[in-house]
Length: 260
Image (cartoon, rainbow, N blue to C red; front, side, top):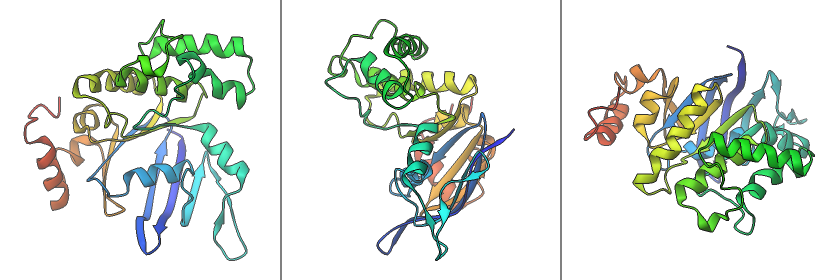
């Protein structure tokens, strides 16, 4: 596999607090990586640093072998506007609260980015939107507005919108946390299908079953640092640290089928 993304000694501070504290890891093309860990451990901040929605305080990010940003005279990394635009175009983002435009139809939400940023025609963008809606199980919903959809349907539209930019990877920030329990599976099924198709995905999630059965690698994140990183059959089924054992026990006490 070819390396798609790598970060070296990544740090994000807010005042004296380090939300991300010296993180090193890489992502290969086609990998699905699940990032799990307690709330407030810095998982979402790490994700937002990777596509520069948050500017890292220290460290380096490499995308397709090229460093994002450049070193200033004092040695810090400077991220220019062209870096921000380029990275965000190539790494799609799916948020926990959908972030759809309520005054635009489903089709318009999906086609807006390709038309405005990729400069493709409205006709081409509309046809692509229809194809993507089929992929996420929303065929025929083109003319609906977000307010007419369930939470699960809105999240699937958000996934289609991210895919419309033809990204090299898609980042998911707790995509099911705002959903009612009966709607979670419909979103996870779409994500599993994307993983099966070879889409590179980094997923911050509390869905341990998804991490166990879909991810190629599982990262346990705690206190702003990676505590464990490896295949799910080791990280989840045979954790090495007492903290990971405690976390897994809390999340799987009533889920004996966690590894299928």
